Image (cartoon, rainbow, N blue to C red):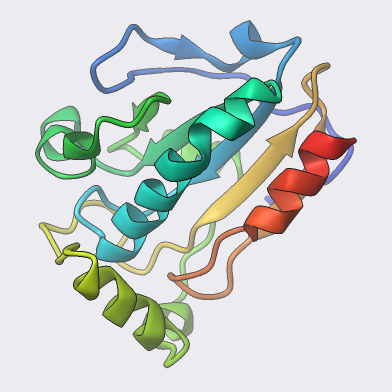
Length: 176
């Protein structure tokens, strides 16, 4: 079941790559962007993380905490997305429990959509090539913006594997 705007973000404690375990409620008092990705070797996901890293310092200065979730075990995160040394926690959820908790979906049409091609080409040009797939192959990404009280103020459920919440919506969230 999808998370709805206005509801309290479901709390969780999870394994984090290269850090201590993370509990979402421990971030209360800060604005949080909870970003769900596909597998750790997904070129589209790695490109997006790269773009997030480039903007991280400006967003952190405005009080944003980013939490990225991948449907991959720690070893796969370490050998793929972990090589980018993200300054934010990367949650490893190989059993996809958080994906279920937040109502993420899968779609063959979203996986095969021609809309993914331009993003795949951009990822390849940036040096992000496919790695071993883990978890649900047709998983669609999702993003959740959570306010200081732990309430979800915006949800974004992707229709294709290349979609994520636009950065302009992150900036608008921080400007509130």
